[in-house]
Image (cartoon, rainbow, N blue to C red):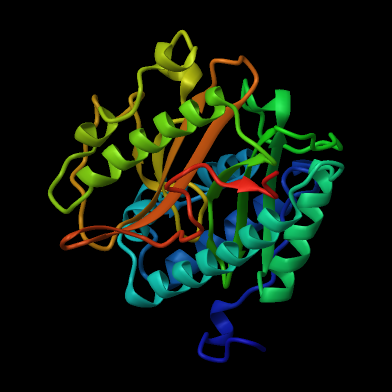
Length: 319
């Protein structure tokens, strides 16, 4: 109906399990597996493996029982999505521009007496007004909740002198953002300023290394070791200081971190698009700085497309 370029015979109704809610005993998995096998036979590819990206376990078992050789299609899709086209980069830039505007609203609204969830509501409304098709998640974290780092929001009241950081994860025409910013409310302490300065230095050092031909292990070395931010292992610290590809999915290739990049380095190419994240807890034991920039790998280096100012710690509604 909405995609007339797809032949009718290639658009089939399907409901097999709804993530396991329908029991395999209903026979829908078995029926679908046989239908797929018949299509493969009709197309002359019955002897070839079938690549699957995401699958429910009962469906996988049904395909195997029907004699279909199932292979890992997820890796193929991730490789195909790693380099973005001009159109994809345009959509990713438009999505980032929407969040630029939302952070201006957050900056103006962030004052004592506002709750974390109110900031989430404000941001969500603005994003849908600007054309977002899905606001997937917004982290809204303030005060003593900044360290250690949760990924949620509460009804906590913002107070004078709080540090607060936010992550806006949404999509525009299917293309995602992952975009952190940190603020202090009214005023900033020395500990908050020092943490932000360090997080920004790690960020700038990593971004300066990004260009085609550089391998990801070199970039990973720009990030702090786990003990430097209070963790016992790189596994425990994973996700705080790293890079991740972004596109149709929130986490795509490349993934750059101290956890994986030393053992499995990959070479950067022009056309890659990824987010660079840093996190530094403050010496006061509660505050923390969290920064994230989305970048495009161009022939001459990294182009930052997240433009709300983050070179220095923004102080909202300064006293």
